[in-house]
Length: 290
Image 1 (tube, rainbow, N blue to C red):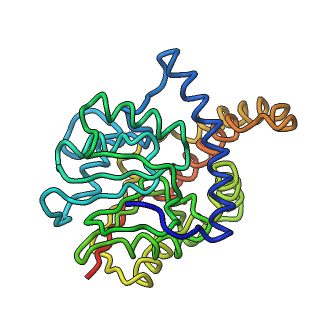
Image 2 (cartoon, rainbow, N blue to C red):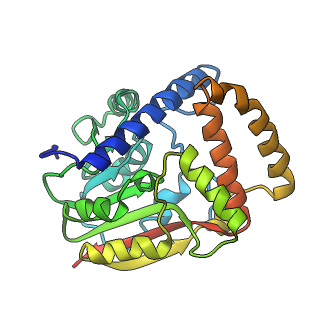
């Protein structure tokens, strides 16, 4: 799959913002990895979920849950829209076979991910490109998924339409993301707005918004699951003092323009408070091209 054409101006501006954001976080991830505190291309960075089948919570649980009930062909053609270091492809490609392409805005993520692809003997089967998922896509896919990535879109309906256009007949689009409830108290809306700003998520559609985008793109929703009961979230009694302490630490760095890491941490805690209270639901939605 190769890029053809150009990305719309609004999507291009948003892509630059997200790329800058991840340049900061990629550098911090490298630093923490050196200290043995964080993952690399071999480890997913998305949420650890309790396994309904038993076992310890891990970030790999979502890989099985998001594919439940989908009728995929043997050796599927797969696109990971916002693949990060490619960890999901590294986990699933050996199990499912087929041809796997990941898109990321981060050259660091692509380089480190491809090093892991080579180390695992998956060259030719798994590849990572530095490219926006809003760019036109050549070729047809049996499965396209975005795990905690499509929320960064400046125009989710257009993003879904672009991805849907790359699906083969019978192909599936799977969205795994944080989806705000349609109604929430004003104070919770304020927290949601700060989370969206700190994590560079300008829209963050509701469940209904994603489903409407899928239908408008000619896709039929076929499966969904609320994953909040499987999240490893803490109670407000624990989160509130942590959040207050981070807010105090962030004041000076943010004034100096150096607060990206702390903003990311604050955004994560704000999201966790909203999940704890049920105002944001972590969901998986699957839709199929007829």
